[in-house]
Image: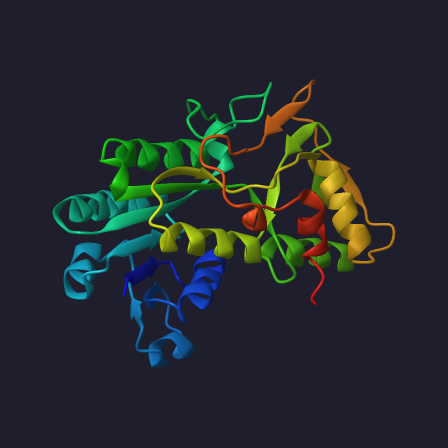
Length: 271
């Protein structure tokens, strides 16, 4: 049985992945701050990347698959990933790195595919690119780079933020000329489960098959949530339409693991 370690399993995506994978694999996770629930769960280990060396946990646990869903200080994350990469080169293990559509946020004229050159104007995007570049120097069977767009769903931070701003009668920030694709947390975890199950390798773009303007997406989500007359703050970061979308071309998943924008919008309602 595959032994999986999710680094950052107390975060939103990491915890959703733990719940998806735990019944099928020998799955472990890390958490940072004191938490009674995680402390009692013997499959969770406390780990603070700013003070601890992840290699010690890796040597003890010997996972066959490491999933990085880390958040926090970028320099500390870079150091942790360098240690993970060094460890997987010496052991029978691979790293699944949760990356972001932001590795392409410098491009504006078209959506981005798996093996397009990355280029970012943002600190976040450039940080993700550094780790991606380090992984791409390894044999392809040692890594999966999973580039993820905005994630929605009934209990996701983005949906909770929309509801909170609405309750406060505060404006919801939207980007009328940014064209994106998106995904739901449930579909994302299913896709990563498939990637693990089938021993996939390389780069995957895990976004919806179609595109939508960011403003239209948020407006439709508000309609689905039955939020009447929300206040929108329109932010124009360029004079022209700009794409921030990751579409699959080389590594397409089966039809049942693909998702449309409409399905993402529907996912914000608890069923």
